[in-house]
Length: 435
Image 1 (tube, helix red, strand yellow):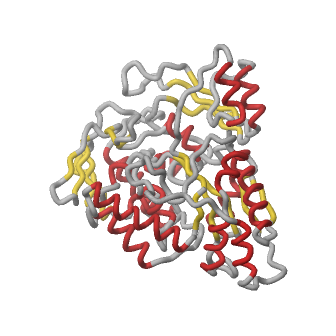
Image 2 (cartoon, rainbow, N blue to C red):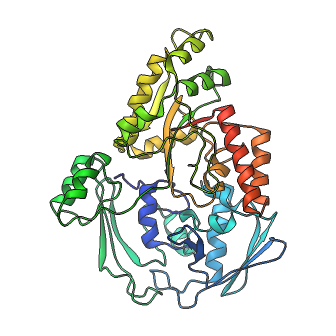
Image 3 (cartoon, one colour):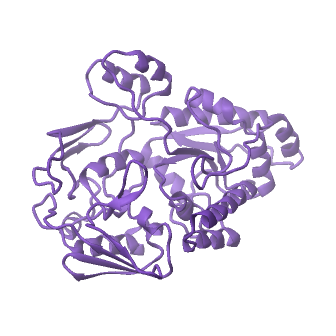
C-alpha cells in the first residue's frame, strides 16, 4: 500500500518496510502465529534465574546473502549499532535494558541486562533488531537502498514508489524453503487500483485490503480473503510542547468531544473496534474501561471558556499514501470544527511524514502502528520522556516509573495491572487520543 522509503532495518519504522525486511532479514527470535516469541537465528535460549543473563546458541550453517557465514560477532555488531546514539535508531528503546552483548565464541551470544526485562524476548522479534553484516554497512554507509540478510529471499532491486524485487535464496538454512522463486512488491497506494490489480490478475496478492472492497472480494471467484482482527492501532497525537496544546485541559476537552464510531464507519467502512485505552480489551494487557460516546457540542462549550487565540489554526499532519488514515483525518477535522476549532489537513508522503512527525514539526497528527507482541512494544518508546519515537514531546515522571515497573515485573497478572495504570494515565494526560 505504501512505499518502504528506506530498507535499513535499524533505521526504518514503516510497516511497508517491515513487510520487505521480514523476507530478507532475520533476528534471534521471531513471533509464531500466536505471537509467542520463538528462536529463529538462535537455536535456543537460556535465561538465568535472576533474569540478568540471556544466552543464545546460534544456528549453524547460516550464511548471509553475500556468501559469508553468520557468526556471533555479527549479532554483537548489529545490536551495538542500534544501541549507539550516533546511529539514531528508532529501535534503541528495545535495547534499553541491555548492559552489554558479547560473543564468548563464534556460535554463542550472551546478553547481560541492567535489570530484568519481561519484554526482552518479544523485543528480539522486532524487525529493527535484525542481524546485518558489518562489512556491507561499512561499504555502503547504511542499508537504506540495498539489503543483505540471512532470510529466504535475496534483494534484487528497489525503485522508490514503484517496485521492489527479491529472488529465492538458494542457500537458505531452513530446508525446503522458500517455496517461491521470487517476489515482486508493487507500490499501489490507491485502494481501487490495488483491488483492481488483484481482480485482474495483475498481482497475486494484496496487503491492506481496502475495507470498502471486503464484501466484494468475499464473493469473488478465485480469491481468498484471509486474516481477521489485526494488531493495528490508530490514534491522534498532540504536540504538547507548544501553546495552546500544552494545556492539558484543552486536550481533555477535545478527547471528550471525539466520536470514534463515525471515524471507523468512514475510514474503514465499519471494520474496526473503538479504543479508549491503547490496547483492545481482548488482549491480555488491554484496557478494561468503557469507551466514551463523545460529545462535541459539550466540548465546544468547554473549549470556548478557555479563550483560545482567535487566529489559532492547527494543522492535522496525515499520510498521503494511506486512504484510511487520510479519511480519518477528514472526520477528525469535521469533529474539531464542531468543537469550534478550525484545523487544516496537511497530507504528506511517507518519508516527509516521518521526518515531520518524529521531529515534532506538527500540531496534531493522525498516526498508527501494527504488530505489537508485548504491551511495552509501543509504549516504551513513545511514552517515555526520552523515548526515541516520543513524537508528542510528552514527559511524566509517573509514566517513566510505571514503564520501568512494567518491564521489571515478571508475573503477567501483575504486569496487566501496571499497564492498566499506564493506559489510565494516557487517558488522563492526553498526549494521544486512541481511536
